[in-house]
Image 1 (cartoon, helix red, strand yellow):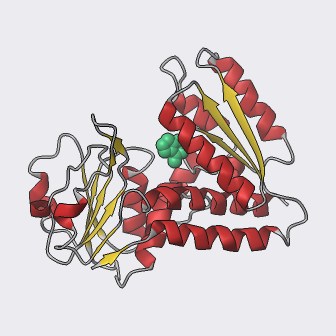
Image 2 (cartoon, rainbow, N blue to C red):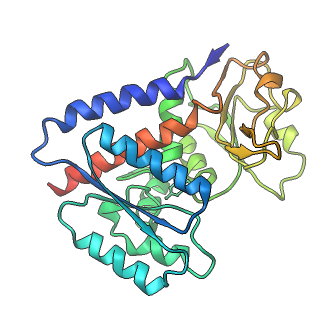
Length: 277
Ligand code: GUN
């Protein structure tokens, strides 16, 4: 059984990017906007900023109060769209209820949309001619490329249909030649689907959801979950101990998908930078 070491793979990617950045005429610039004080978002934004600094990017961390208006946030994005030393703009999600998330995402020009969430970038992913691809699914494809699996014709099940992970993940797997099933809250008899899957991507946001009896012998399981349980412990969407002896490869939490999302954000910022210099 392989434990897919996302932490190590992410370290290698950062090292490579750092070397490449040293050859650039100016550092790639990434602006990360955090609205409000959600503790989990604060941690994610801090990790993103630290990674930027490590690889030699210019990092602009912008913290706004949760009562910022939509107009104020839009004008902040407009300012960053026009800023020549900023190559990537990321607005940490979720946003407060009074702000229209879709309007904010669409305000970022596609060339600087390093999350790959804009209609233009998602549309390109749908057509398999991508420019910037959403970080978590792209990072997972990179993880899958490190194990011995040919996705052509494989049966893949994605649990979760979010815009950030589930939907773009399904499209990545389709683009790689897999047959894809997307499961969500209304799906009947999920285990009948996961039991037939060669690959399961768990992105439901439910701690320890996937158990041994959910997965097929020798399948591959990727865990996207970061769930804080009542006792304060962080667990994935997969019950790792229950599943690990049945599968051929599994990603752990922590040290799996999380660090790869951030390393992929750096890769996307380099792509945005190169399209602009
Ligand atoms: N919130 C959770 N994941 C993400 C992500 O990948 N990008 C942004 N902007 N917000 C998130």
